[in-house]
Image 1 (cartoon, rainbow, N blue to C red):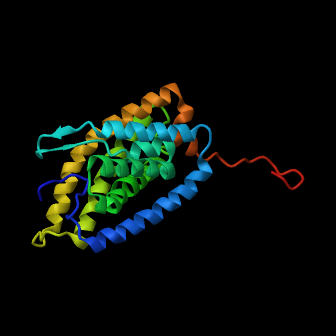
Image 2 (cartoon, one colour):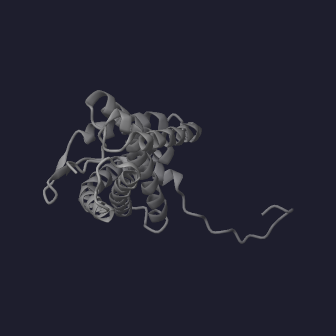
Image 3 (cartoon, helix red, strand yellow):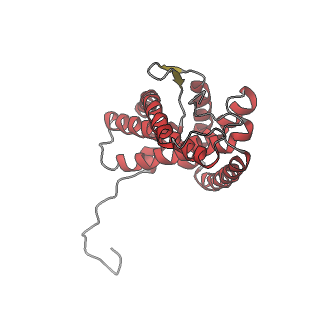
Length: 239
């Protein structure tokens, strides 16, 4: 393949598969809108705009992956999930991908459903699941928050890359000669390296925000530790 970029160009995946994923992405984003509206408030709404603008700006900066001869950039799923939550976060990444495809030609317009599924939906969902797990076992200190952000960002990039492998298996336009495992391994290896850069950017950004305004970090206020059950005796039928 000429490129290992996560932004899938027109013609790499056939039309029927692209159409199916476009419908799935539209349905998922509709669900995100409905769930996200329940969480939007005076704090989250402006933060969502800032997160989308930040992801858009940082995605313009590519860092080279010398061992693979390609370059990578921030995908933003983990960053968005930590700062504004999974529902609004997926919408932020999707908006960035749509603007990039329509204005800058980064990723094919016909492939938008595929790109949104991989980066906005799979990447954000995988990141948030890891965030929810790690923040329940790690201390909520700057170090614990940095580890959570780094690990979730790194693995979310790898998960997103494997979404492309699945899509290529379903409708790739170039015959790989049955070497799908090789494609999966190559994509995972390259995006593991890209994920290191993603993790560093995400950890630095989230910790910086948390030190100044911890109330703006969705993961800190949305994921609370389970309080131990009270052992006080019940009085009047109410504990």
